[in-house]
Image (cartoon, rainbow, N blue to C red; front, side, top):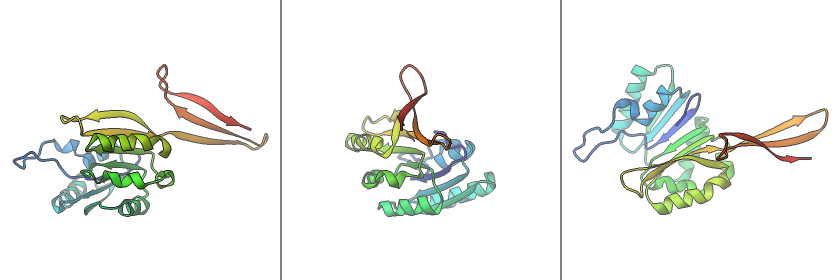
Length: 196
């Protein structure tokens, strides 16, 4: 996860607890703090527990006063809520861990992701994972890492937007469309997709 210089939206930003209610991770591993430590320009977090809004607001005021941050208490129950957050905060990086409600993204179309360069999805079943895998390419994303938790049906897909560049040579009046992609032999290659 590389949120440097990004406007980072963390859906399900809350701290993790064990069955006794004890915090399970060091502060630096909670995703809003993790993003700030790695140079996020803005951090926007949403969680269903109001304790998390208060905690992160205070933490950011004390520890990251130069990073713009906004925290909200809300259940994410429809895609319009997310689209408004993306628009209102100029979001270009989304991490979602909203306990099954991540499926609301499955109704999105490619244009809904126009401003998004990175999309991290925690899924809670193989069916949800497969649904995302079948749509990511259509949305213009590729999976660059896949993490699986202690429970094989819960995991995380780390995706990045396939970069499309439109180059214009005004003297020759032609367009080249170039895509940055990865191959097994090389980490990144340039491919000419179309020239007219």
